[in-house]
Amino acid sequence: MTAPARPLPALPRIGPDTAPVIALTEVGMTYPNGKVALIDVNLEVPAGDFLFLVGPSGAGKSSLIRLLVREQLPTTGRVVIAGSDLAKVRRSQVYRLRRRIGVVFQDFRLLPNKTVTENVAFALEVTGAAGDHIRDRVPRLLGLVGLHEHANHRPSQLSGGEQQRAAIARALVHDPAILIADEPTGNLDPVTSWEIVQLLIQINAMGTTVLMATRNQEVVNAMRRRVVALENGSVVRDELGAAYERGYEL
Image 1 (tube, rainbow, N blue to C red):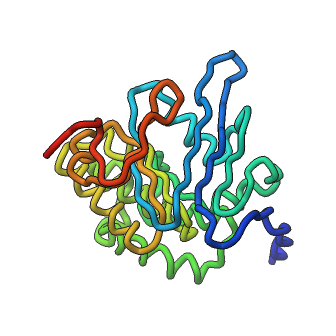
Image 2 (cartoon, rainbow, N blue to C red):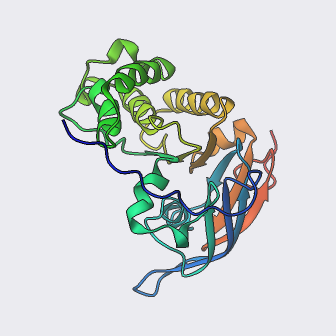
């Protein structure tokens, strides 16, 4: 029997427990090829918030998400996630930081040769979770996303919406403080897109902070939540109860 892994030191934390779950301060990001992706971005997201990150292709949405999950570090400024300054998180601790952040992608990224249950369970297995915990946690998540009847199906046997539900269940395995949805409806029809957004709203109502990057104007306009708009790497708008574009009226 393999001995349990020695726990790593706690991630460095700053500020009080009431600090924003996401905080970017004067953040700039320039890629090695000289491309400027983000310019002086300031953003605070309280725990439990739901916001849409909008903007045209190339506006900087993907670059911002890379910073949030520490795929990249900012060239200038500071990124703090769940109280941890990402510049102070050692490489050996990054995987622990990422357990606080669930990520859902446009292309689902499910393992094709595993069932829905196995896909979700695998995200726990690779972190050394106990078998009893996996057997309890996975069915609960499949029930939450409405996939209990598809537990033994492989991705190829599922519709696009069902695959996205499976991906959302997988993203929630560690009960993250933040769920980042990167164009989660990009490959879905309008009805299915709405169902996925409603599921994200339900998850948010349970206490998870949700950041959804999207170009789906219909969803944003209908929901009237907080909207953060990027353009040419800069935040050009941050409004509550807003539409995809300024001046849009129902």
